Image 1 (cartoon, one colour):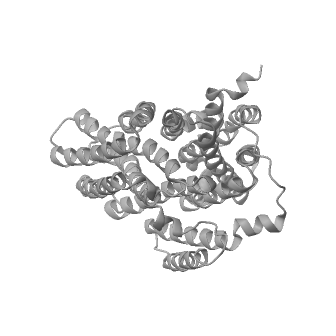
Image 2 (cartoon, one colour):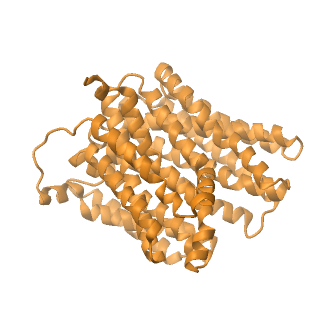
Image 3 (tube, helix red, strand yellow):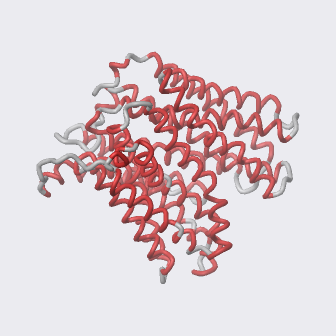
Length: 456
């Protein structure tokens, strides 16, 4: 009777169901902004904070939640994150004011951001056989939710207006909580940690400096779309400098900065992941404009063509996971990075000289390369992370994803400006080529490093 509690499939289902909440909710909101704007009588710029605040909160929360999970238990953090998302799912539809809706959205970001590092940490500890396949499955689910989020959101809004995109979380949360409660292994029994000891081990000053620094930097980058907020940028740089200075001197750091110098493999994983997400999100947000304004295609046809980009991750993730189990991560990382360069070069050569379908097939090579990186770098990150900081490492990994997406938004704003010009898309292709070459070089450097450079 107890065998089902040890089921690999159920454990992965629980983690994947929880992990998908962050990408699903980050993408579903896009189609709801117009209706929310009308209901609350606000400008689009104000309402867009529902997106920006989610990214900011997620970027900061994930390494902090990972650290807390390392200290008090990952199962507790996983289930606690589900409860926070439940508060937002119930409270947001009845928000009497926009400020309350923003608060509910922050609950959603913090809750869903707490789930991923805890869940991946559990997978690392519990699944040793075919771990690449396991992570490939989780990546496949998360990619599918990010890709299908706008479609799901549109259907829900047509059925029950914008509150439906919050309410839909409730059945998912119920299933995930039941699975998590019965399937996730109980946290190790440890000596009960008193609050002062927990505060010391959490390094609250380090967390504060890190949080203000990251938020300041992201606000600065996000402001490139409107009026550049130099003040936020200056504050961000100052606080990040103070964070590094503090972490190098404190006995129990929130993030051991020395690790990035001694553990070069982990550092190279983070750098590659930032660039890969920059490329992917630039493609994801830049292509629809090219299809509609450059090629004069309909919105519906453009949406179908986008599936060639987003769908690559859904198709290839489990295959890549199996390959990693057999061959390790070095070759898949290099091949994925090379696909980005090859796809970008072909796109530059044949730009405007081939049919739409051939062009989309070329673009799908870039999407496939990003999909390779999404799975392989996740495995590489876990293998390079010391066992006692897996939660923090996983959280930082997700912070890198948000940094990449924000850099893409800045890049698209600088390249396209206020109006889309098809010629500007060729500039974006040049950016892809340069970024692809950089990530290939980083991948080569990673593959040549001795495993000993990833210190446990």
